[in-house]
Amino acid sequence: MTFFQSLTLGVVQGLTEFLPISSSGHLILASRIFGWPDQGLAFDATVHLGTALALLVYFWNDLILIVRKEWRLGVIVLIATIPGGVAGLVLERTAEEHFRSVNLVAVTMIVGGIIMFLADRLVHRSRTRDLRDVGWGQGLLVGCVQVFALIPGISRSGASIVGGLLARMDRPTAARFAFLLGLPITAAAGALKGLKTVAHGLPVDEAGILMVGLLAAFASGLVAVAFLIPHLQRRDLTPFVVYRLALGAAILWLVR
Image (cartoon, rainbow, N blue to C red; front, side, top):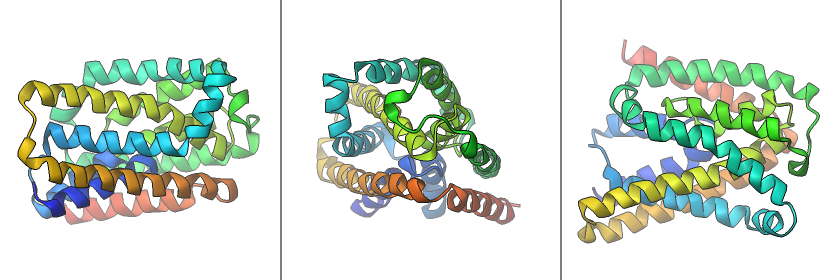
């Protein structure tokens, strides 16, 4: 892996991990466009650590508040991670081996965009406008919907936000809950891949390249989160829906 590849994939990972447009789908597309081989476990673990650090920095005050006062919300977040965590452990290898088709990414981009558009129309029925008011059932619903993010092109943040909208949260609350939910899952994914990397031997000669990927994922992830939440306080998900539909259609046209 080169420094350019590490920087490019780190930025792609950071931006698309948090914007509802699918990080796995974009990483597959980037690799196909540039003809790059699979980036490997060490890089995957590193960029997941970078995006987890971005969430940790952005939500630091929220996390301190949860630990000190809002422990109920913390428990709901942890319970909501169970469906996705179990599905990831059981189905990750299947997804890696059978769900990496460019055509599949195109279709799920389009289908996910349509579902996101329809869910976004439910906002006028929202009743939960504060994280502290998120209920147990709402949290579990978001966690169950997040399972679909194992399919490239769906998007973990997109699925979680859609789950929040279906649970009748408003857009900013759905996004904030989605990102809080993403912190333990992203950190766990990075830790699991990190352990596998250690078992296979650490690529010491690539330390500098991996650090570039980590910093790129951290910085771009922080920018993405800092952009999306204020955006959803004023606007809807239409730009992301249009992007998903356009990209999916373009991919199908190019590979026809």
